Image 1 (spheres, rainbow over the protein chains, first blue to last red):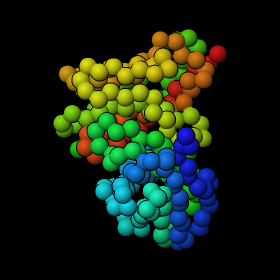
Image 2 (cartoon, rainbow over the protein chains, first blue to last red):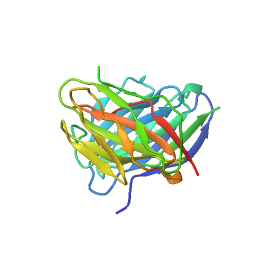
Image 3 (tube, each protein chain N blue to C red):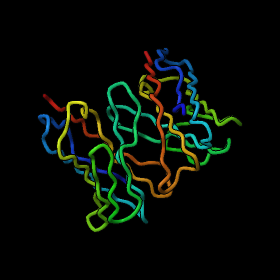
Length: 115
Length: 110
């Protein structure tokens, strides 16, 4: 069965612009989480969506937002990009809401570079 | 809050050497514990997991045992291969999203 698909794989944007990243979860999975990975901060949780509702949110500014559609696909948006937003953005899907022993399956990520 | 501490890398080993990557955690309640691996240019892959004390997770020759008394989940492999070169992340999940360690880069040389 197909894995988690993230598009695009690579993106270069200019400071001040906005960007939208897409994630298609594994078929049948209803939970999608987003993580930011940087060399300095490691992997940090952004937010989680389950059945089109945001269930958890990490400690990121309001410039970071997301949504989930009825087919479980998810998008995240970053507005007014800053150089520090350059990172690998990873999406993870789970069959159920992310708690306890729920396994999360990750996509290959979108590498965002802000110049 | 919940946190994971991993040994700093990088770790460089010769092929067929024994591997240990230390992981300790701080968490309230009874979290599930995971090891993920990230190959160059890829996302994270689940390597193994354990959901309660004394559980042993294993996969592809890797093992880790959930030790509640020492709050540890050390990753071990008896004989590493060049193809095991990657970054390894220890993670926990109580009733929250995954919390990751900083990662340990492993390089295996032939």
